[in-house]
Structure formats: C-alpha cells, structure tokens
Length: 211
Ligand code: ATP
Ligand code: MG
Image 1: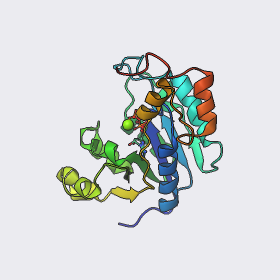
Image 2: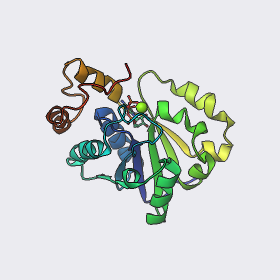
Image 3: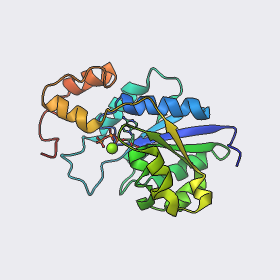
C-alpha cells in the first residue's frame, strides 16, 4: 500500500501538563512521515473523571499553546475542549478527515496508548480513515506490541498501524505532577514557558494527585 503524498498528524492527549515526551514524539513522527503539520488536540474535561484529577481545560490548552510556538509545523485545535459529552478520537479524526479530504492522517500515540487501541470506540472505522503511529517509549516492548495484542485485528487494519522509535524519554505527566507536589525540579522535562506557567498558576501543588 503506498502512503499518501500529503499528510498531517494529530497528537491527542490530556497534556496535564504537556512535556518533551509529547513534543519529541510529534516532531519525530512529523519528520518520519513528512507531515505538513501536526495538530495537538487537548482532550476535554472528561465528565466521568473526578475534576480534581484533571486540570481545567483552559490551563491545559494554554500550556499546549505555549509549547508549540517554536515549531512552525505544530498547530493546535480546541475542538475536544469545546465539545460537550465524551471525547472520542473517532469524532476528532472524522472532523480532520472532512477538513483534509486529500491528506493522509496519522494519529499519533505512545506505545502504551496503542496497546489499548482494541478497546477504543469504533476502532475499525477509525482505522478506515487514518493511520495510527505508535511511538515507543521506555518500558514498552515493540516486538510484543507487534506480535501479540494487535494480531486480532484484520491484516488490512494492521497495515495501517505504524511503529516508530523515538529517542528514549521516560517523561510522563504523572511524574511531573508528582515532582511539583514534592517541590522537586521539573526543569528540562518540559518547555520553560510551561514550567513558569505551572508555578505562576500554582498548578499541581495540592489535591491534584490520586493519593
Ligand atoms: P499521564 O502520566 O497522565 O498518563 P502522559 O505523560 O502519558 O500522562 P498523556 O497526555 O496521557 O501524557 O499522553 C498523550 C499521548 O502521548 C499518549 O498517546 C501517550 O502514549 C503519549 N506519550 C506520553 N508521554 C510520552 C513519552 N514520554 N514518549 C512518547 N509518547 C508519550
Ligand atoms: Mg498517559
């Protein structure tokens, strides 16, 4: 199957907060598949989640905005934040499919997220309209990923899942929140503007962790 000439990427996430793991992954995928743009799409406030565990969407939106200013290929969309009800990747990709009818669409996730793909809402319809890119992150075995769990998908869908290795980055939002709460440094784990934004708005200092 030949890959489409023109393509864009979509990077979804809670981005609570966004960090260099997300940014390095998006840039690596952009380069690998020669994407015209990568759109960051922060998820809405999930109605079924305890609001104390997910930071207000305005903060997550602004931190994402601050992070993409230095990359001309990075854009963002508030569509999931503005949407009421549950936010499904399928609904988001469908909108991009309508707006970019001639482009290939690469939906970018970490390998941990792609392992859950089989449980996703309308996964086969999703794979009909986009490619999936699973970026490896430390602790997730690619061979295992390729060989086992996804094999229940029909071959035509498996071919639409691309695996790429990104520089090893053991950074997670969970770890950053924990470090802020424990007053440990977060410098060099995320863009400086986001670090300053977190301190200025006193995010993650209390009541934000599951403990
Ligand atoms: P949390 O610790 O709260 O789960 P997270 O760091 O995984 O946060 P998310 O916003 O949940 O961040 O992730 C959005 C997407 O980015 C997911 O597809 C996830 O797999 C991917 N991702 C997150 N961190 C990394 C990383 N360090 N390297 C590669 N991909 C990552
Ligand atoms: Mg995660």
